[in-house]
Picture 1 (tube, rainbow, N blue to C red):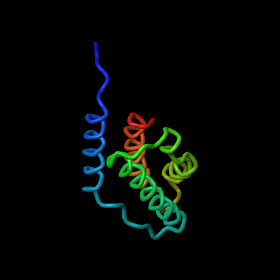
Picture 2 (spheres, rainbow, N blue to C red):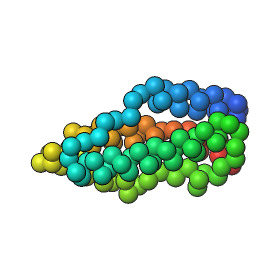
Picture 3 (cartoon, one colour):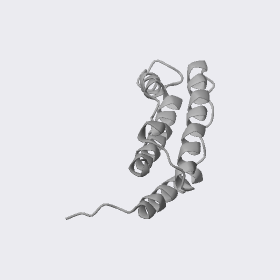
Length: 114
């Protein structure tokens, strides 16, 4: 039988995942206007996630709803990434990969949320 992880164990797991993402450079901006706009929105989302995760790591209390992803941004990234005719498709794929890592942090954070 699997036992539930303690808050301290979850916090350490979240701290490690956050540190690993911090070791990865933020994706570079695109020369494509559509991808560049999504890059700016991804930067805003990155800041949102960093603030929420830092709050949890430092013992702050957040509800699960405080750790929501950005479904609209994800859909727009997916659409551009899947548009092989767009010059920004390759950049959008890199942004989507980074976005998914941010979503993974939020998911870990929801395990700690009240």
